[in-house]
Amino acid sequence: MNRATAALVGVLGVAAALAAGHLVAGLVGPSASPFLAVGNTAIDLAPSGLKDFAVRAFGTHDKLVLLLGMAVVLLGAAVGAGLLSRRSPLPGTVLAVVLGLLGVAAVLYRPDLGQLGVLAPATALAVGVAAFRLLHARAEHPAEHPAGRRAFLVAAGATAAGAGVAALVGQAAGGRVDVEASRRAVGPPTPASPAPPVPPGADFAAEGTPTFLTPNADFYRIDTALTVPRLRAEDWSLRVHGLVDRELTLGYADLRGRDLVERTVTMVCVSNEVGGPYISTANFVGVPLRDVLLEAGVRAGADQLFSTSSDGWTAGCPVDVVLEPDRGALIALGMNGEPLPPEHGFPARLVVPGLYGYVSATKWVVDLELTTFDARRGYWLDRGWARRAPVKVMSRVDRPERGSTVTGRVVAAGVAWAPPTGVERVEVRVDGGPWRTAALADEVSGATWRMWRVELTGLAPGGHTIEARATDRSGFTQPQARVAPVPDGATGWHSVFFTVA
Ligand SMILES: Nc1nc2c(c(=O)[nH]1)N[C@H]1C(S)=C(S)[C@@H](COP(=O)(O)O)O[C@H]1N2
Ligand SMILES: [Mo]
Image (cartoon, rainbow, N blue to C red; front, side):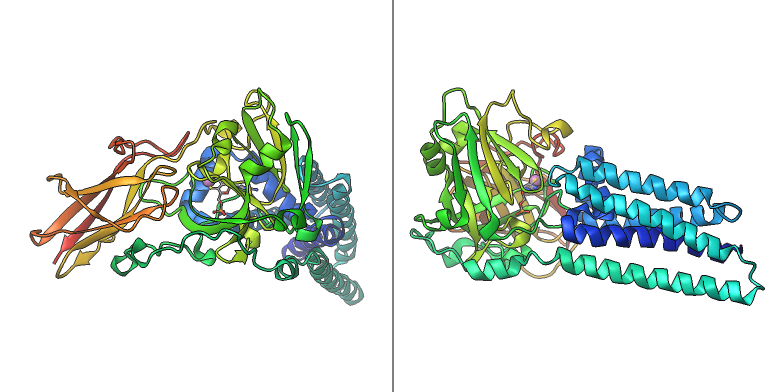
């Protein structure tokens, strides 16, 4: 068998396996697709340092990078196994079995898949072995034998076509949970008590800060989900249980039937570096989390609200925080006048002002358990992150941009945040000189970010460094000492180098 044929046999065997698995997954649960299941498991098992790096380096594209990397590795393995199998089909068979078992293990490890999910990688294993051995047998005819050559090409073509069709059918079947139709059907949740309108003076967007409200399409996104969970409002329910007087099971219609409130909230990710982009603000509409917990009756001794998403991700936040009357924690259904977008948690998520998202902001939330911190540990806790995670007071310089050259007036502008109490003051200094107090934009609430601006007069032409620091309502000023995001959020003054022309 020549090398090209051998490589082709390997690649087609793997393609047939993946496609067959994808087809079955379309029927039993899209995330059982072997490729995705292995990817999701890789995310869960990856050392947290690597995950932190991926988020830093690729941001929201981290998952695309993972999928591409897996595809390259797989292609390499398929070609390698094909080449090794030129004399005997054994190496390729072993690869097909090993990949299939990897898929089985990944599916068993997923918390969101029933036992039925194993059918997908099991089918992949069987089809992979069969397709590889069949093609291998056909390819063993010497190339100069025209009939054998033709038979091989027919088999190879049929395998490729069959794999393509199976993958497409699996994709279509998996997409049959029509989230968009469900979002359209439920429509935008209307608040009985709307948030006060955001005043026009709440941002300095004209000077380079973000707009006060972040459009949904631009809202930062962080999660461990390789594919966005596809839930329909009509199938969804939220169970409230554990250390409660009465268990509750709330359907989407139950929640929509209540008096909904709207709150303007800034969300921040703990992975945000000093000066980083993982912060956004939206009008969230939902049911006060406190009301639901009081309805269930929180028993003495419950110190953790442990929430679980449909894909098995978990977070735990302090019960005393979510029960604070002024905290404004929500079971959110809507975001900026729309039902939650699928990637931000449709049909429902938690939002807790003043806590980093990894301990509080569970998307696609399906389960709330009142428990203790000793009894259960959220997803990121076993990966080195802290149990208590209040958002740290922070400021960011958006203008001048790093490395830019400014001509004419020099206006510095940026954002600061200190939820839930709010920003009292922002100061900037240039080249380590005296601090100048910045003008603050109109305050919306302590739960949201606050924009600042200051004109920098008297700067000589040449390079300069600007630093900013914020002070919260308790009078605490953000410390200069640089601390990395792990374990409970970065600290340090954001500094930006720019040039005056
Ligand atoms: N189900 C689920 N919810 C989740 C996460 C996740 O990985 N899975 N990530 C959390 C983290 S770390 C943050 S910062 C926020 C981000 O919410 P966003 O993507 O809507 O901005 O969601 C939180 N909720
Ligand atoms: Mo986060």
